[in-house]
Length: 549
Image (cartoon, rainbow, N blue to C red):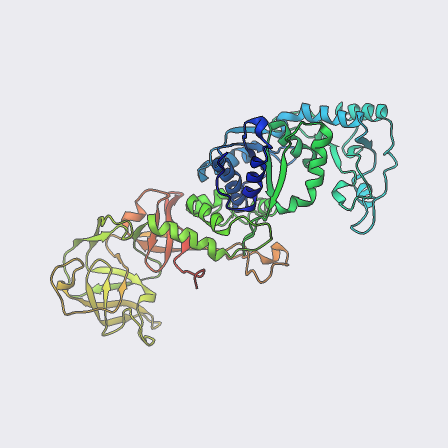
């Protein structure tokens, strides 16, 4: 059979298995799954796993199940299920089937009884603390539980009583019977069922015992006919247990194969659902979709194009070794995507008035929408001769090679005219209050008339008569410098990760559609949104390019 070219070690493994005829009995169908636990929102770290799994599905014309690994009812909810579905849809991925680990509870329970009857599991009365204490260390074997040699009959009786609700939480567990001296601690009689008198968001009060992840996950894969369990590197030490669980259940070949890859780690970015939930619960952010959050809903709310995230993961690649990627590389992917699609517009974040003393009336100027899309399309911008410019674009005492406005120099107002600064008005504190200029009518942008008047720089502006007040929200990473990776996340949180202030912008933006991205000159990419009836410019990414530098 003709196989696609392998571009990473996972695809090389799949190609070798296909060439060996491993999947001929199932028509060479490759089947993978994406199995999040619905106890939080997906974050950017999940995008890599999504890209890998959906990439395999597409490359091998296979199938992919979206499976909610919902075996911990105390932390799971439909809110998270719905957010996961929405995030995957936003990324543009299409799964073949939505399934839940809780769909298999009856089958998982039956397999547990099979384990007991075949001497592969036993009911243990040790507490969680006692089990931990007897598990041993990396250099010392564990100690057998005093309940390890209970008879099959007694174990079945106790396990069925656990299911019937006879015992309180923590009173008993079901443990796999493997090897307490195994060099792999995960194989030292792990717990596979625990008592939890907690209603399940889908199953209600039907169950008071729940399977552990390391038990339910491989069996769910086997039940669904998954060929490859593609997961991050922290599950590498769990692979022998994964294989043991499937083997003792008696599933016929070919059984699922677990393959691990390095997870996505990004500087300055918090990627733990536990800590992200803490930020939400403690009110540090507005919610799971706060634009500062690395959740997919947060990134969507920020205005990040999904194509940029997929490009970022493609650039990072699929590797076996742990590494940390710079946040600047992600920003560069976002910037590249927005540069092609975002409309150009003008906003002044620190406004100072500029008055053209020899101009009267008003007119409409042509402003190019996006010079990179090749269309040459323009829109109209009103101009009255009195505008706001950014305070940073004027200097009373300019540094060497200064190319913006100063007394006696010329500058071009974007899409308008060249102006010369003649004088300034200062306030009582000596700050510039108003800049007085002369304009040169023959220098209108787009004019066919050749003018001898030249300007060294171009600056943006907002018309004083038509400009609108708008709230601006700027963001920094939630975590401070990556130089402190070993500090507790609470010590690294940047309490000034969001800055809110007011600015001036074009009415085209302030009154335009929500969620639309814009590129503002020398400032960055922002999306326009509305909050409480107020127009807001929310930062997506800066214009500054740190990655290539």
